[in-house]
Length: 73
Image 1: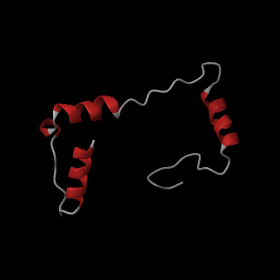
Image 2: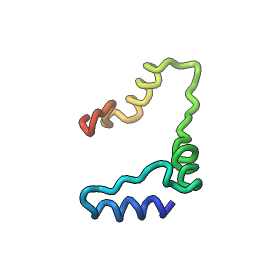
Image 3: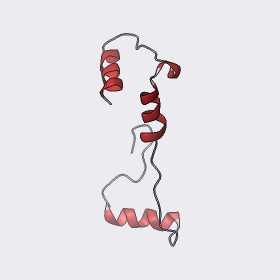
């Protein structure tokens, strides 16, 4: 995990930023990007619709932004 982070830090001090091709990644780095870090599946209750889940979350965190777009809330 430190390898890609190190590349990111090193690249942040270079202008223009370096480009790294996907094909140049190691097999381990590809595994992390495509499988481990992409494992975002979540099980939602089938007894509730999306708007009911949304309302439930609003009730739990009324002061939190409901939606954001490009850093704007």
